[in-house]
Image 1 (cartoon, rainbow, N blue to C red):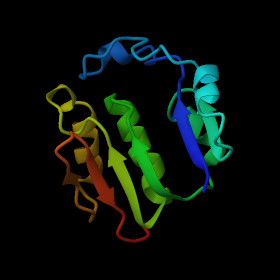
Image 2 (cartoon, rainbow, N blue to C red):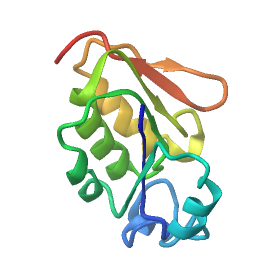
Image 3 (tube, rainbow, N blue to C red):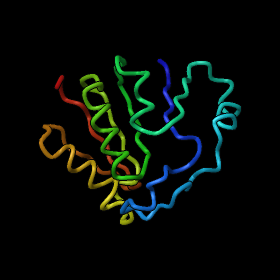
Length: 140
């Protein structure tokens, strides 16, 4: 299977300082696309999608996924990921969310996940490492 990596590769987007997580613009901006490609150069099955979410999803509108790991921290970005990937996860597929169980993200990542799955039949399973995951039950 292909591994799709979505990232700005330039740090948090311009409105990060307005997010309830407390992040600042350009946080995590210390890894360029070229550096990441060099680090992962032995893996030919990786496709890179630089840019802001959800714009960077345009190239994969018709793809289906069995596993999605979401670590984008900001409320709007987590919500955008849920909205895009949920309908594209195959039954039995898994969505993992970082930062769900950390106080800093209660009004950011956690809130976005909780709001999105509020009217869905899937349960949110929390992990001790601050992550949570959802297993897709059926086609939506």
